[in-house]
Length: 98
Image (cartoon, rainbow, N blue to C red):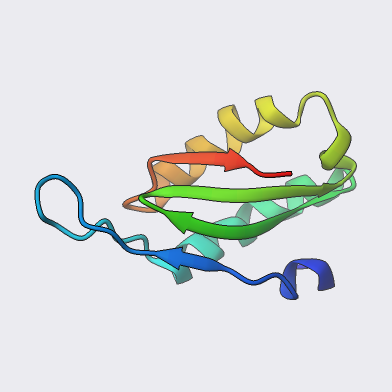
């Protein structure tokens, strides 16, 4: 993880879904999974910063070379989102935040 990633504040919101259950995301598992993804992103000169989780939606900032790359949204949706929804219960979507 880069220094910029370590200095970011993570905002976590737990809400109740329509069935009355808690919409929980295991933040340590989420961070562990991002650490699994991060080396591939770093090989291309970028990095991921976890900005927060709300209602199962993970908000990430793509920094470095990924911040201005036209393919970053495709990487986010077809790669990062797929991995996070498969490996982290409660994650329903991943959004890039500028």
